[in-house]
Length: 293
Length: 147
Image (cartoon, rainbow over all chains, first blue to last red; front, side, top):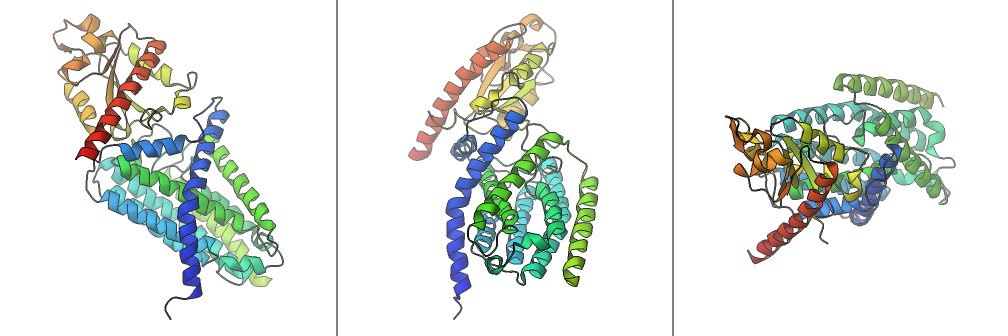
């Protein structure tokens, strides 16, 4: 039989992720904007502002430069959904990381397809961002494997202790690259959530209407998936520990917003250098520790 | 209320004149007035913008730029002429190179006079513009359904 049990689990997980992740991600995006505004001494937009934005974008006229950027963004959305489905159904962490990278690559293709100098520069920087965070993501997955004895996320429920007990350095390294993955300042090089930057809007410069709405929805789903990766470290055999996982994920997310509001954008050279240094030091130390335990 | 009026993203362009009105536009967009409460975002990208705030008069050098920005904006869109120069050419109206108000280049929906235009007048004009944006959005939806 081609249809195995894990295939059905992944399918159910994907459907659940497609339904729930945009809702949770939308609320998180709204909260993000309110918290950011409060940090800047402002009131900020309504909680559902990201939803209003996307509904407005969907209602806008269809204008596209290349004609294919919308298709690429649909592919990016589909791969994001599968990555989330694989992860939240307890599937392979490594596979989830690779599939979400496919989504990032389609996003880069969408930006390149417009041939606009701003979007191309943004796409180039997005590529550098992928290069910067991918080593740490892989080392994180390797450390997870060495600690849990499996790449399957579901294995955490068989553990006597949470995975974090053996993977503190890898978790710190992952928190560092989480800022890049969430496209937060100081690493919002390719496209910025905030008004102006030297690249106009980088990757999304030439995107409008429905295509831009897809970018927003993809970002909501990505946020939920990455926070899931964060919470995974703190869950073990007790089902109640899921609450701890959610609390830690939300704390990490708040920490990212704080970083976003307090640090100025760095150059891509600095981002690449530090991301790799952190990956090699944190991931390397953790692998050595795990190899000797 | 539709979604167009809940998330009006703004782009501003300083055509010419003394720049006083552009400073007032930025003052109205700064955290003190916190326009993000109403979903307004100051974008630097015409493709993302719904409301075009133009200050200053149009001259033979910048008329193409104004038209270019307007053409790049995606329907539904509205234009607000901020300040008397953008409305009619103002004190510069008879300069050798000045063509007149912004309506010499693109269709203007709301005129906000003043020299310099007060932030309160800009907010007033933007509120009116949001109403027009809503109407245009509904017309576009109806046209899409009819097509």
